[in-house]
Length: 148
Image 1 (cartoon, one colour):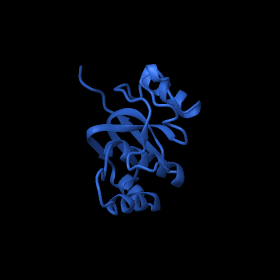
Image 2 (spheres, helix red, strand yellow; image 1 turned 30 degrees about the vertical axis):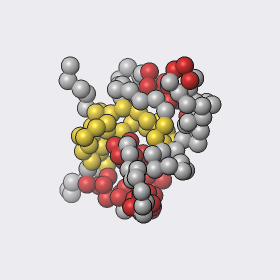
Image 3 (cartoon, helix red, strand yellow; image 1 turned 90 degrees about the vertical axis):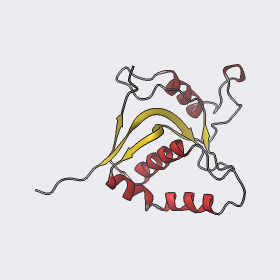
């Protein structure tokens, strides 16, 4: 029997939200922390993002938020934070060939002035998450933990 292919995304995971229609190249928004998906349920970062994306779109300024910064955002979604991101070949093929990723890439390549690109790890996570929804991909997130 042929080996079944699958869509795996490995890394030290955390949470973010992304504004797909952001007028700036950095569509990331909301809280950010080092508490990614855990068996114990939603940690502080996920709870904050759920309130931002599902509620008013903002966190109170005294808590470090900007009014409405997550209005219209997609997420929250897990993403591999930092330099270690491992994607299965099936997942790379599915998201890199998608119209969403091609448009995202073409828009950034056409920029004449910096910033050309920011939050590349969160952007990769956003593209994987959004394409998984659009293409109904069975993505398996593998959260690697920091060694303590």
